[in-house]
Amino acid sequence: MSPEFIFETFLDLKKDYLSFSYLGNIHDEITDMLIQLSESNIDHVAELSKMRNKVSFLMVESFQNIVRHSGNIPVEGNLPKPSLFQIRNIGATYYIASANVIPNVKTEMLKNRIGRLNTLTQEELKSLYMEVLSQEQDGIQRGAGLGLIEMARKSGHKLECFFEPINDEYTYFYLQIKMSGKKNPSEDEINLTIESTQQLHSKLSGENILLLLKGNFSQELILPVLKMVEENMSSFVNVHDKNTFFVLGEILQNIPKHSFVNEEGVKEGIFFMEKFGEYFAITSGNYVENHYVVDFEEKLNAFSKLSVSELNSLYRKYLREGNETEHGGAGLGLIDIIRLSNCNFQYHFQKINEAISFFTMRAVV
Amino acid sequence: MEELLREKTEDTPYVELLPSGKITFKERSLPEDSNSFFAPIFDWVSEYVKNPQEKTEIIFQLEYFNSASARKFVKILIEFEPLFDNGKNVKVIWLYKQGDIVIRDRGIEISKVISLPFEVKEI
Image (cartoon, chains in turn orange, green):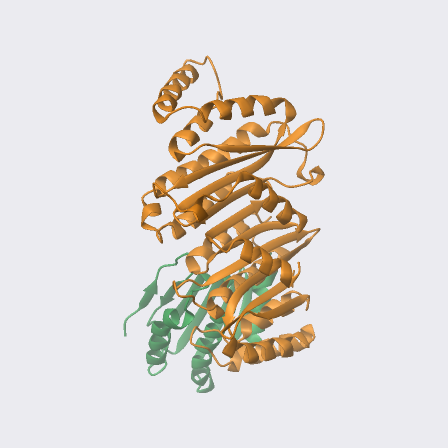
């Protein structure tokens, strides 16, 4: 992943206060983490915090919908793209999107069902919901789209869907739900089409991205991500997994530590986790103030020239004597990242203007 | 001297500092601001070392800690070195979960920069 790709993706998501994409096997364990993640970020817009429960509900519903419609899908490895689950918050609007593989035979049914729901009023949706619910309770019909009806009701907007054929048997089913905290959102806020979601999915998949997070970096944003990665690990004592976790923790916590704070008080940053073979690549990007760049670059340059054993000695030296910064860091984090990546580490500074630069770093573990 | 207790949180460890000389850190340590989290711990330790027990045991049983916390743990241990130099019984016990080689090695690494008896033990 090049520094250009990182910055370009960051700019693509410029309007997102929170942007989270997960590409991989969708399973229930990550739902809790996603709720925590979105709740930690929802209070910044008053109109949104009122919708807190609705957003959480729709995320769970959307997840269950993926599982419900997946059927007997081929193994992830044989697919051109892994499944997608995405949350984006732009202004007072929340988007929840998913993409998963469905058998072609289900395409028409879903298209018709969603098309029909989109023609109904809130009142009609409510009666349909009651009708389907009683049929389900009577055992007449199972899985008759109660989830979709609920999504349409709670969202208050048309459900967007998109079908991308894979082969003679399977299709990607994209579903996007929108929720607005404001009655009349600005033009910018209603700009996110399902086609752009599909394009972002392809772009991220092309780079083997497992996780993408863009937002206001703080401990509240970082902790759910660490939790999610941990839950996806084979065990928390496995050497490779644990070392990856150490790098992940240091890189994530490094963003708010060094990030430029913009006029809204936001420490804007982006984070990627890629998987290729047995390896993980962990990447971050954020603005830093230019006056800070010279020292920072000098430090990184010096660390990058050292071998793992030299880094180990330096780590021990800093452990005992290191000068701590106002946030408690001592340069130890950077040394730890580089040595754990076996020196497979890159960094880059791109000057944006007289005040700030965009800083990226990437470590392969 | 009073004890200092801190329940664990998602990003801070369980801390138990007892005037009887038993000091314990458990679970995870990755506070957003390690200076403010560890400040009361340093205050307690500097009081304790003025009038220490004959025997002091410092127990670590961690499953994850960030580099800023590693530095703090070392700084805490450095406070106890003069006690040991003056003939007091001071011991560090570093416990790690079965198979957790990374945490074991992190303990060994810390033991190399500290001049105190240091036992690394699997549990």
